[in-house]
Each structure stands twice: as structure tokens, then as C-alpha cells.
Length: 337
Ligand SMILES: [Zn+2]
Image (cartoon, rainbow, N blue to C red; front, side, top):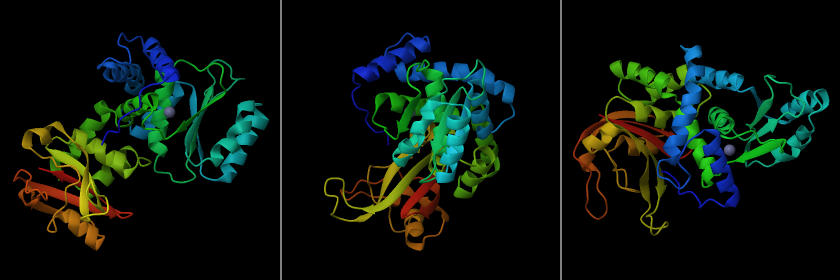
């Protein structure tokens, strides 16, 4: 579900205007085409770099784009990595910005730090250093690389600041914009769509298939982001959702049941009526319910006509193939035709 972004403040507006100028696009942030224009301009810059890498995976695209932008990725999994980076950049290269590394990474909300090296020479591959904070979890490693690349492609160099920190802030208009650019690059359509089509030729959409595609294209990507991208490019009707045990929207403690949140669907799903009401219950017979109760992955055919809301509305009576698995108390499911 897309989260509403906050109204941009003065600083955001300056950054959004700088992005438009840097990418040479005519629309302004308040125009309805702004996000699409920014995405298109960024992809136009990415295309010739990826063309040289073909055939390639998503991980290779991240590295290749980093190289072309003089950006090196560093990963911090624990305190030993902080020591290593301090030795290399602070002591070795006298980059004073790295003196802040330790304090910055103490904050678990910090996803990544982007350093612009003060003593870099033209063309140094580590002119920019993106430090990914993977101490809590590695699940965002892949996504965060593309998020940092989006900043580098879209925004002019920061010049004065030796570092910029990135916290998960989906409601900030600049960060939300960078995430939508990141989504386009992380699962780059000209490479990813044919790969998905290849799997779709001989397979139904299941979590086995999602994992095979993930391992082939981007092993460091999270299941959720890979699932969403595959659904988008699946060549037949497909939708994804998550389900949790919770109450009604208007009374969170009342009428507890296994309830769903849509995570996206493709254009074919729109045409076939493969969609859900917000927070509706997954019926007991659904593989989604069975995955929740058994804790085991379920793959089965079901009829969505059995899905009803408490006010008596039901979904289109279409037969779908549902694949569902339980991870940390939450069911992930993909439904396709
Ligand atoms: Zn950011």
C-alpha cells in the first residue's frame, strides 16, 4: 500500500527543484507527471551503462552503476566492520567525515550513509562511499544500494556536506521519490521482465519460483520486494498480499481474524477482477489460512467467490492458483490465473 507523503517543507522543495534542474526535466514537484518524469530521466541515464553489462543480473547492475558513478558500497554487519572502515578511510585516507561513522551507526534507524570523499582525485572509484547499515538485518541490502544510486543519479553533488544519512522515511517526499526511482532500477524492466516471462512459460507463480528468480537475479534482495516486482511483470493476472491476525480497521481489537493487505497487482489482474477489499478476512478454506495455521507453505487452487466481507460483499468468482507462506507471524501470498 502506498503511504501518503508529507507536504514538502522548504528544504524538500529546494532539493526537488535541484533534482528537476539536474535531470533537465521541465515539470515541477507539484505537477502530476513529476515522479514519472524523474523516473524516465534517471532510467535514460542508466540505460547505456546497463547495455554494456548485458547479459547481467540485478547485483551486477548495482555494481556497474556504482562504478560508472565513482561510488563504492561498503557493508557494516557488526562493530568489526566499523573498525575496518575507520582504518581505511579515516586513518588511511584522512577523510574526516568518517569520524562520525561510529556515532551515526549507533542509531538503528539509519539505513545508510553516503560520504563524499574530500580528498578524492577525479575518477577515483570511491569518490563516493555508500555505507550500508546491515547490523539489524541484511534484508534491505539490495534495496538500499539502489536507493543510494538514485540519490547520486538524481541529485547534484552535495558539495558542502561530507555525509548524508538515510533513514527509513517513506513519508518524506524526497525519500519517497528516490524509492520509486530505486524500484525501477532494482528490478530493471528490460532485464527483469524477460527473466520473469521465461519462468512463467513453464511454471505457475509460487514461492519456489519467486525464490528461484531471486537467487538468479538478486540473492541479496528481500522476498517482499522480489515478490512485488515479479507480480508486476508476470505475463498473466497476478496479485500479492500479506495477511495478519488482527481486528477491524475501525476497531483494531474487535472481530479478530486473519485479514489481508494488498501488496500490488498487475494490469492483467485489473482486467480479470483479481482484487481484494482492504482488511478483508481470508476464508478458512483458503491456502492463505492453511499456511497461517500450519506454518507450512501451501500451493493450491481456490475460488475467490468464497471470499466474503462481513457486510456480505464477495470477490469475483474466479479460480486462482494461490501460493502462501508464513514468515514471522505474517502470511505472504501470491495469487495468479
Ligand atoms: Zn535517501
